[in-house]
Image 1: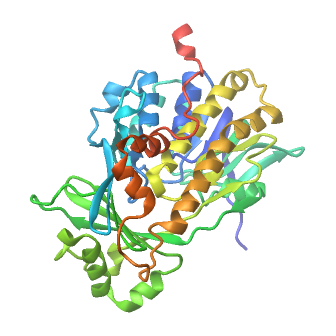
Image 2: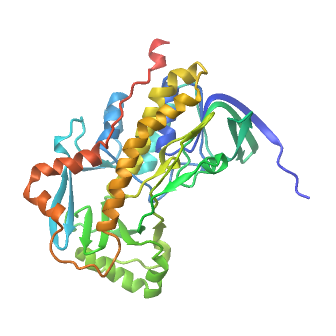
Image 3: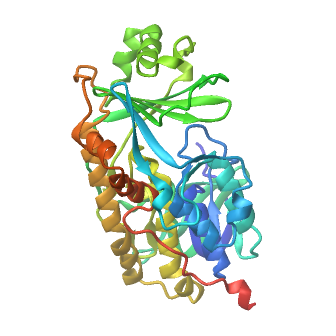
Amino acid sequence: MNQPHPITEHLKTNCCIVGGGPAGMMLGLLLARAGVEVVVLEKHADFFRDFRGDTIHPSSLELMFELGLLDEFLRLPHQKLERISACVNGETVTVADLSSLPTHCKYIAFMPQWDFLNFIAEHAQRYPCFQLRLRTEATGLIEDGGRIAGVKATTPEGELEVHADLVVAADGRFSVVRECANLAMIDRGVPIDVLWVRLPKQADDPLASLGHLRGGRMVVMIDRGEYWQCGVIIAKDGLEAIRQQGLEAFNNYLAELVPFMTGRHCASWDEVKLLTVQINRLQRWYRPGLLCIGDAAHAMSPAGGVGVNFAIQDAVATANSLAEKLRNGQVGIDDLKKVQQRRELPTRMIQALQSFIHQRVGHGDCHTPSTGLPLPIRLLRALPILRRIPARIIGLGFRPEHIKSPNFWDKA
């Protein structure tokens, strides 16, 4: 009979954050900066994962400025995108112009997410009250009288129990913590999935539009310097039907949408990675002693690339509201409720907009006629001032957050 692993370690902290993604790492940095004892649990050995969201929007770059880290951050390798364009039924149109945003950086920075997370981790680890535990996978919650009092986890050395005044679930759209807490999810449904694939870049490639649309078909092109990262929009659960048509048909499909990619192709289905797209949110983001943020609270679609930045905004709002109270051990259920109240409306608004877009643009339907420009695109072409609207939505969101949590170490 198998015996359970013995408990080999106990920790006590003010806040235990599960998940070392953008929301978890940013919250960890801000809380540690505010003098809160914080432990971040990350199940992987490092931050290196392929096909993760890696658009750092002006709102997030502004936070780097507010932290005094912008110049150092921008020394990391990245590409700038000042105007978002799309090739729609063969005609290229500027969709969003970020130059009018009231921020220090009027562009989107394309940066591998692992570089961003390593940067945040490096700065968080300069504070003595911050711990990052890699290869530590949350498996359950510790409850005490109906209150979440900590996290159970496994490590290569054995089991771990982290007892905390507050547990924050930042472990993504398949959150283990959320599942253990039995929090109810509202699913909006979405008609698409995305196939990610890398294709080689050549010296004479044109400056590609971010989106290539023809009828209901769409490919997103991200310039990675040495290669193109392509996101092919397909109908929901449509991967098996595409595989049955064969790899050659898939390569031809991609070349038809992006003609200069003709001749570059996937050699195996192993090179094609499926992203199952979700748009959902929790009905209630909290329980006594527990708060969910980022994708654990609300999964976004890739539309606009806003998911990472909304997760970071959640972290900032959480730190602004809870840092001082956590340091004094005074976080109550009403404090957690206020975080949801602040972040829920912008979440609902962007999810409604994403759902609207997916129902009408780039839904993977090969049978949609591919003639002319849709009315919104014609308006953006005719009236350039209108490009400020999508620029503000994509670049800043509906309620951009600013860092108000204190720097405890300036006083020390």
